Image 1 (cartoon, helix red, strand yellow):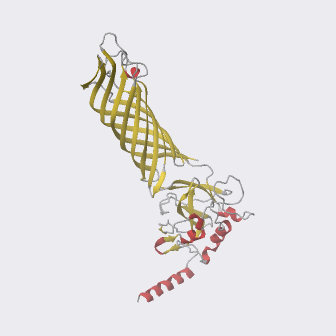
Image 2 (tube, rainbow, N blue to C red):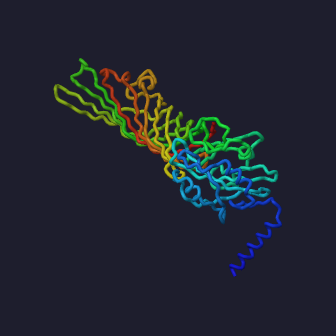
Image 3 (cartoon, rainbow, N blue to C red):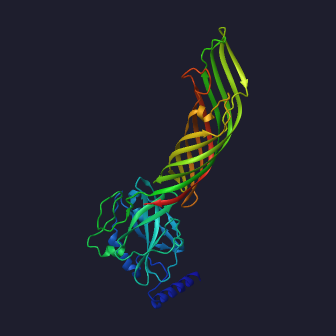
Length: 428
């Protein structure tokens, strides 16, 4: 019964092809006589160049349930190690389009040719015999959510196309006009990556200008650590104590650190600036005095001594680089440099006439860490981050009787946080 039903369907399809007009809403498979015109144009443009720097491109056949096999593309270009995949695609509305081809190409970034992705494109003729190009701009295997297809203008030979891949990022290349290429006298070929030569040959080549983008970055983090500052006191004739050293200690239990900034990216490299405000929870604070009294070493511990700053404003410069891990995940090593001001009027220990920022000079910090980023969509990344920060200031002018060059401080914190990165604009 099943075989009879399949035979009946085949006969009906054959009759419908005989009586139907030339306009069709179906994909024309490779080898079908109806696709000869567009396929001829395609074959005149693209040779099977298997050079390791070429852009792999090939025709493909639409299989049942709108699936496409990448095997032919992978076997034609073995040097590129293209994955063998069965892609499930969603087609756009193809009413009034005929002579339609499925095109696969394997796109890579010049600086990281080992990471690539297969992109699907449809080329079809409309009722006026103009070629329409359906581009999967977000590379999600859905050609119905990318808007209307585009047509080359009269005299236009090429157009830049941007593909936003969640895993790799922005892939820019130049798409050639097949109609203009047919009329070209020279035999065209695929252009290698990195070429800067201008030629009348029709090629598909990567964008000569690398993509540049502006991003907004915000984050929320918290850090804890230990702080210490020490100095030696000058000999005092009115004291029987000598070789006296003061060491102030504090435990920073946590902080509330909010950050907002702007970054510029070139490929996967980022450099930017940000501002942040940080509120600290300072725990135990104490002073250790070490000295010799009449030749006898002594040590004295004073609890709750030293009022360590607990709020500050930061101005940060930072840089990072995204390494693709798998699918939508990236890892980015980070480094930053910070200048900061304390937001408080009280003194550390002694009552001073100036603001504490006038006494505590050379205020800066630097940090190293990493982020794990997850691509939420084509423009947004959610990230988790960890880092170590090393803080510094110089309080030599604050403490009386301080021996020159004896001031020393250590203040290291370990941070963890979350954040969001959003692409605001991209430029070519």
